[in-house]
Amino acid sequence: MTVSLDDLPLRDDLRGLRPYGAPQAPLPVALNVNENTHPVPEHVASDILDDIAVALRDVNRYPDREFTELRRAFAGYLGHDLDASNIWAGNGSNEVLQHILQAFAGPGRTVFGFAPTYSMYPLLAQGTGATWVAGTRHPDYEITVDEAVSQVRRHDPDVILLCAPNNPTGTPLPLDVIEAVYEAARGIVIVDEAYQEFAPRDSPSALTLLEGRPRLAVSRTMSKAFAFAGARVGYLAADPAFIDALRLVRLPYHLSALTQAAAVAALRNAPTMLAMVDEIVAQRDRITATLEALGYAPHRSWSNFVLFGGVADPAATWRALYDKGVLIRDVGIPNHLRVTAGTEAETTAFLDALASIGSAS
Ligand SMILES: *Cc1c(COP(=O)(O)O)cnc(C)c1O
Image 1 (cartoon, rainbow, N blue to C red):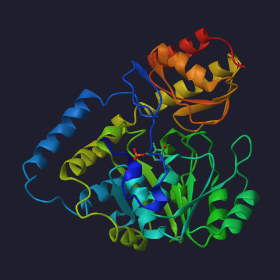
Image 2: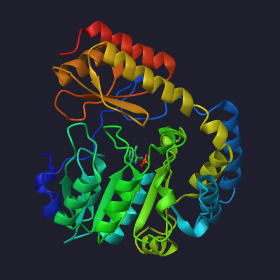
Image 3: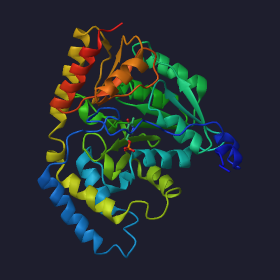
């Protein structure tokens, strides 16, 4: 007899939910989950491997629970006068976000974001027993100060998740909106800067707002710009008191010695690891220009992907690209698809495949 989930005494608030499920298919051109498709350069990989080899000799012992060296390295990378006491890290920024929600959300509390936004936010919120509340954006996915403030006042959430630039739309979020949301909010405000490295160089990070705002946290990841998605390393910067809250909920020794060693070594090679960012940005802008020429309606993006409208039948176009060996993402927005900027060759493969399918609606 096969047992189904319905037969198990699952938590009532998890019944009927679906797990995160971006399709993973072994296609030649995978541009569906916003990875950096450039491999880690060979000399950097061998440098990282040297540090992992050293860490492996002590793997009979638990790792540094406070991952002090790694926190120092992140503080150095971020700048803005941050030090190790301002830094937290986890196995991907998803775990960092989970720690925040475990500490500040939970049963009877609410987590708010401006939809459409990162599909993991509702799942992370529900996982802690909190209720997800979806705010709204303009049709072009932008948010103004006045509307942001009135939505925050109306819902009065315990935690606010601001994705900047926003996934899946690519939309930037001006700092004045973040400041106004913070002032209007009673609860925690998280700015998820997973794609910040792909924004214009002169655009300020929410890190500049941390001083004097103890309820604010800025999260980052090594998964995108750093080409380190498989290593699972995310981090955040906030007031040291905020970091203390996260110590209450993390599992002891949550960052393995091997992960810590790999991340420290990768950060030491930050300039090389980040060298591909400019090329990815160039491919993103090429995607936008070519989609426009093909009659689609790409949205403004400060990230490493482009969301485009004007797709008559997203499921059919997604499938036609799949059959040509190109995997992109149907994020569930009517008449839209999302594509990650890959290498020049991958981007060409996507654009050629799309052009061969036929025109936009
Ligand atoms: C990809 C992504 C992350 C990063 O997740 P990791 O767990 O660090 O791999 C976080 N936030 C958003 C909005 C993302 O798109």
